[in-house]
Length: 293
Image (cartoon, rainbow, N blue to C red):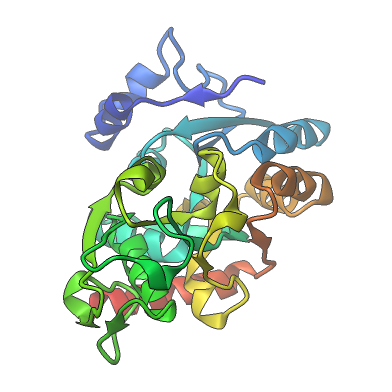
């Protein structure tokens, strides 16, 4: 199946309003001039979308996944109108992106909660971490906060009382092992494993890097209510949230063939959740209000 990659240059151009002509010109970087194609931005090689494409064809829908290699790009492409949906982010990330980019992107449906894990090639137990060990963690505000809360729950640090979702190293009240925080692009965390004491890696990213999620020294619990802000979603421009064809895609994602494909591809690392669009929007609003404080 054809999956279209979208380069950083193309999306940055889209953000300035000049990319549309480029992307729909003769080279057809994201699907040519077929207006009936629904383009969905994904991260990496989310193989369950191959199955969804086939299932959508049975309903007369043409879906084209557009793969991005940088988390900062799919929302810019969606806001610019160069893709129709995206499926790569959780609600905390979406709230941060909307605020920073002054966009109005909303959740269409829930996909999965993907655990965040603490991995190491240096130690077999967290208590064996050396004093001053380096910690590689995602550098975007949403996932950095999640990573620090994970370290708190693992007993490696203690955050200040009342610390919100968007925690930073400045919110660390106690750091008994004097851990050194090393922020990097979330998708690069596996590459740093040989060079740091521990790396905090999303299980989806770990799977792509051929890292067994079961090797994590500590995981967050996807069924923990505190993890609800990290529900991954299919996202859409607010003005298109009632599009009936997009609703069909959301329903297809929750279908058994697609979920079976996802579990096979993700090695069982994600948990599918079935929340309504209104519930997701309320959760997004709650997260956004916390961000503005």
